[in-house]
Amino acid sequence: MKKAFMPLAIASVFAAGLSVASAAVDGKIMPGMIDNFDNGSTMGWTNGARVKTPHPPHVENGKLVVESFGERFDDEGRPINDNKRMAFFNESFSFDRGKNTFDSPWEGDYSGIKAIKADFSATSTTTDNLYLRLSFTDGDNFFSSKNPFILPTDGVERTATFLLDSSSFSVSKDYNKGNTFADADQAVFDAGIKNFFGVKIISNEEYPIYGGSDVVAAKLTMDNFMATDQVGVVSNVPLPGAVWLMISGLLGLSGVSASKRKNAV
Image (cartoon, rainbow, N blue to C red):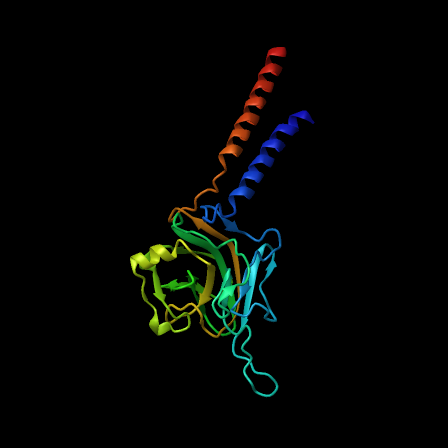
């Protein structure tokens, strides 16, 4: 029983370190911050601009599931606008209300982050591909990926990488007019990236936009939504210095214990 205690203690410290590192620190998004949905929670992700929609995101088998239902009509032939587009977000800023709606863990300063990565899969009855763009706002400007990540709707999981640099984004003062989005100016982008109100994923094929997306019937899954300070390789989650000290101490105790047993033989 005593032999089993040390590995378990070390494993517990590692787990604690991972938990601490998976949140923003003093408003700054840290490399390795991740939403993996393993606890069954949607972790603040919701869909569209209407928070109280009939079919909000949910979790299945440790993955976030988002559904959109395309063009639909009620019994009187009127269009049903809820959930007809593929758009979902995790943010504290509500552009249609002009106020904060909740505190998002993904709100903060992304200046130390080079990319956002996530695993996506999708199926659809109306389209062969989704065209995923990462969008965000700093409250004054609206940013959206210049080029979409093309996700085939064949149910196969693929990893998307959204680079956080000015050349990868378009920007506009109007969130809902695609024709106003232009290449992001370096200074505007550098200022905006320090003040994310959260993040948003939309599917829009033709152009960058923040407040609109394609009308499509699709079911999408997302997993391992992660901030990283590396491009091409996802950085390991950093452990706080205090945790490393604890681990070193435990390993030292383990070595001393082993030495005593050896000398006693």
